[in-house]
Image (cartoon, rainbow, N blue to C red; front, side):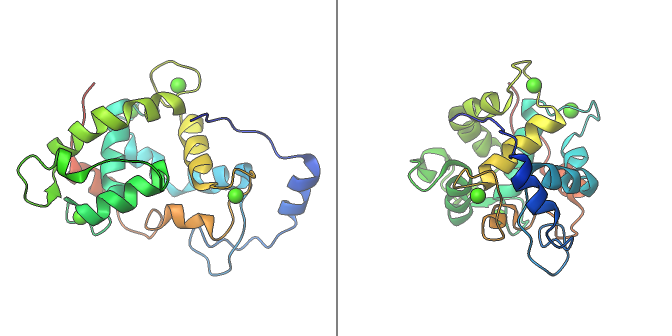
Length: 192
Ligand SMILES: [Ca+2]
Ligand SMILES: [Ca+2]
Ligand SMILES: [Ca+2]
Ligand SMILES: [Ca+2]
């Protein structure tokens, strides 16, 4: 997968800037399409990235990224990834055609992936995803690399606009839950 952010044409940006300021993605009521810059400004105000950056060095190392991924897969916040959550998360990040077998990673066959089991899955299926997001290749995700990567992941049709429908990618991200507390509870998932 190639992750590359292309700037919108000036005309398209101007049209988007003229759109209503109300934003569904970041909590208001009226749906709004997002170009990258508008998204990025709103995203940085949410504190989401800072919550993932648990050692506060302003980068996401691979462990911090994996913990955030686990937290996102775990839709119902019971700190376990069910088979259904596994399917939803994998389709969201990797697309509907991506093949990954839950049973391969549920080592104790209790029907859930805990952090250690998910870490095995991460190590086998996501390290390349992380390096794709790391566009400058320094083995760290900067704030911009992360927000660009997530924006592009949400932009399913790759038209450089995240429409209200495509915003479903971020469902549950900015719902007012204490993401920092969630991340602490998840703890370590993967160490490279
Ligand atoms: Ca960090
Ligand atoms: Ca769960
Ligand atoms: Ca980087
Ligand atoms: Ca799109």
